[in-house]
Image (tube, rainbow, N blue to C red; front, top):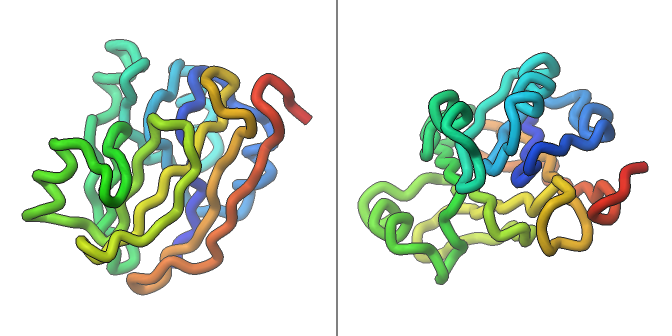
Length: 168
């Protein structure tokens, strides 16, 4: 079993509470719009990090991280990208990949809208952890914590970090 801390859309701001909430995770996954190498350094010094770049990320972050990250963990095929959409509303690039090579778990960010939902058409789980930074239209900053165990997602939790612009 691997415990995962999932976040997205930090936009250069990392709430210190994330370290408390992700204390017992094995890995941190970032679904893009990281915003600064300082955020990367903080996360890499904390736990193993898997990340993709997002549309606001500069050339340095784009060199450090891929557009798409595809890997297997605990018998689960995972695909992380920043802009992808959600079941029934995937963008064209995502739809084309889904048609021939759908993962078990599809993760994206970008919308700043928290969504955890099954996709029955492609037989996968979609997760967008919302946004945990202070930039954007979201009102509440969110992250997701879960475990991957022999091809199944368990212990799924949505964590609210507080209102955008405020830290506790």
